[in-house]
Length: 353
Ligand code: 8ID
Ligand code: ZN
Image 1: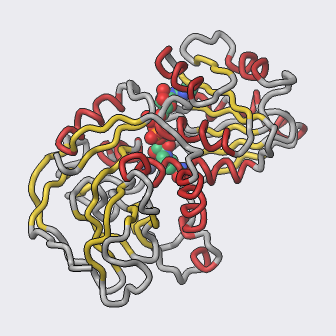
Image 2 (image 1 turned 90 degrees about the vertical axis):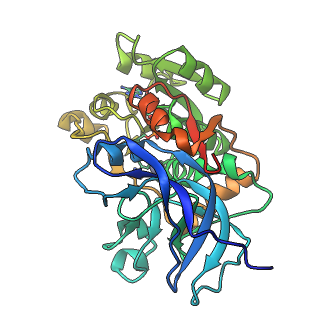
């Protein structure tokens, strides 16, 4: 295949100071290093993590200036001289873990998200809110050509993360999982992955638009946290035998649910913490945690195998989540809606406009 023409300049959204706003401007196109690929990003999902990066509300600093974005789907247009396992023209994805050392004790055991020297897309290295982005070849997601690039973009973080979290919950087909923050980007994906894995779901979020979306995505029950007078009782009541869900997947960007889940998860159940509200703490009563034998775990994105599996579920047509496409130039307005909790599902930006 003839080498594609690569411009020297491109459009990007740049965070020039923590707190924002992001600035839509032209910046140079970088050249890939020996073990890297250059991806012509066509579409990128907007994850709440990108907003955390803008706000600087986590105890981990970002690079500045920063090009955000870590759900970028596109086409490989250049590769370094050491790269021999992905071709120019292949479809590929930029995910949160842009690269890892592949050498530390965690990488050696395939716990790559725990790498001691990780490169994080759109956080410690520039990400996918630009037309040409760089990633380590070992880590780029392989996307089958028949799959829509705009539809798969949100799988590259949201999909992988919730799929991994559901696996780590050890909930089995036929059991019930509560998805907290089900109306958001990760939440919508979690409802679809859970359904594909044969699980019943209780969706928890706020407002009629999110309720409608969650039910369309397969939620058996919806508990509205803005209306419920007793969330613990309502979630238990929504589980088939009233004992509570076998697992809880916490995706909300608020602290409350992280302090409530232990009260409604069923005995021997598992709580998976994924959402990352700023300055928040998890709380559980020692007595009932012990005698109910509850497990509380953190779950952080997924490794390369989880990535392959999450994409495979999508490619088989099992994951259909609604998303809205806007131009990359409109990214700041997406952040504004996200900060107001107004987004149902995911926004995807089209880098051509
Ligand atoms: O690897 C990881 N652990 C990982 C990967 C990707 C994202 C973690 N995250 C984190 C993000 O940084 C963010 O903190 O997961 C969180 C959710 O990301 P998102 O799904 O992209 O955010 P969103 O689309 O804004 O959805 C959040 C939903 O939570 C609901 C909101 O209404 C919204 O729909 N919510 C809130 I805020 N408070 C709630 C509550 N008390 C609630 N839902 C139920 N109960
Ligand atoms: Zn993300």
